[in-house]
Image 1 (tube, rainbow, N blue to C red):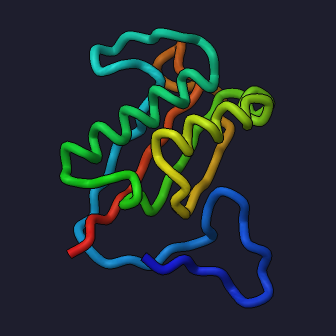
Image 2: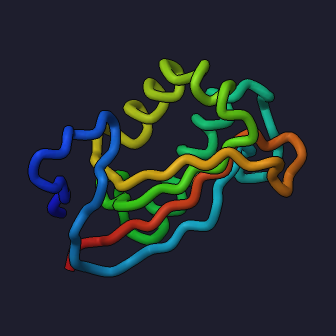
Length: 130
């Protein structure tokens, strides 16, 4: 993986502006904060993020991948203020479950998600090395 950072641009904190990679692509559908049986255990934003990230890692593992193979993440949040307020806990969960890898990321505030209790949905593109 090669992180793309145009000359003169400041290095982003916690993500990359772009990445260049080669290998087998794995596309993971939006994961929300419920467990493998479709049960929510919390309405806490950071708690839902933790579960969604674990769901991503579980799917990726099934494909033969690891968290460091994640190249792109899109986060859909229902309340950007809640997302920002939970930043420290979200960062901790990310580091514990994913690591400190440089995926290209986007976060978007949306009006609602399909599952009413869901506060966050994260979709991922991973690339497994050849």
